[in-house]
Length: 477
Ligand code: ARE
Image (cartoon, rainbow, N blue to C red; front, side, top):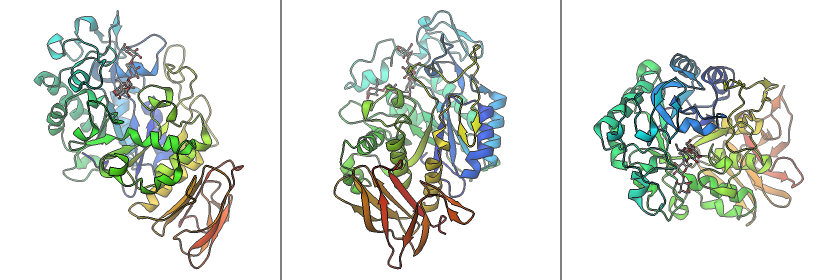
């Protein structure tokens, strides 16, 4: 379960957090497909508890496995998957299977289903009290049994050892596969036993060639196991059964590009043992996610987000230029209150992103459309499979490297960078795709001259608005 089954040379997915299915379908056709994005992670698609003022986190409180949420219904989901697949973009579903809702009275869902959470009664599935672990609160993260068998934040904890629970989850997963999706993010995976998850994964259908997948292809599964070391549950218990989200990664990059750590240390960032990272092929990586960009989950003040655009774009560019892991780009809505949901009308319906001159304007941030980020997605596709070479650093906070002879990047966190560097590229004039692009045969940003021996004088001054420079063989004049 560690192949995302991207189409062609695509390499990167984007989390379109809280987007509606109809808008995602359109985004696949208008932008993601043409720009070379490989996939979209959608917010949980199943029916959830409706909470007053509609915080984003209500979607992590399931009431049933019917496909109906503020993103849309089953017909809209199906249409989206079909349209996205058609333009080469896969869909991955955020799957909340560790628990149902917390207590609420009355408890009604986005599809009108009711439940009695305090009695552990969820007729919409159905689940009864027999399907849950006896209520207790997770307090001690050093105790693996407590982490797996007690409740995370009062969310009623399903017992995945039970056949009924497994069967209901498998049925839901297989329905999503039948609708053409390519895989799942497993929410709160660390709160479930690996052997239970393994038993569930074994019963998930293969992807269907009818939906454009290769024969005998298993769905992609990436599990949310927050492990920064020193707790009772380890990420290494999970990467044998499927992929794992590597939370250490975004913390390291956040510190690096905030100037709190020494960038030169990234020279061995592909050494998994040195950094205690899971093997690259099993890892899903990101700079930030929907939790840690607002202080939930782990990472705290280390995490970089769209709120600090210059270092954020540098960190995302590094992630997309560096070969480790499968990359996911975050696409957010603006917020001041961390509970705040997406832009919505007074009846709670989500307002579609409005796009003017390629940018989202009405409360959606759309990092995935920022020119520097979309250019680096293209860069990652172009250099896929090329070795990291020509590493250079000044020993401090300036670094550069190439990907074989196809691409070159340089980063400057501190001072002015003005150096003659080996780019690994064939001689010629290249256009820096961070500050511009080739338009009508001319470079609208910085041009860099690579001479016969592959070297070039690279300049990134601290006063510039971008701290990264990127060259590749498709942006050669
Ligand atoms: C909400 C309210 C709670 C209330 C609860 C029930 O905020 O006050 O008790 O509802 O009524 C999201 C939000 C939660 C929200 C929940 C349900 O973040 O605030 O609760 O939805 O609406 C741990 C888990 C990890 C989890 C993070 C947030 O290990 O799995 O906490 N992340 C996922 C999702 C979240 C989602 C859930 C799980 C639940 O990405 O969006 O919650 O479905 C250490 C540990 C980590 C731990 C972290 C924070 O770092 O190592 O494992 O993460 O602390 O506790």
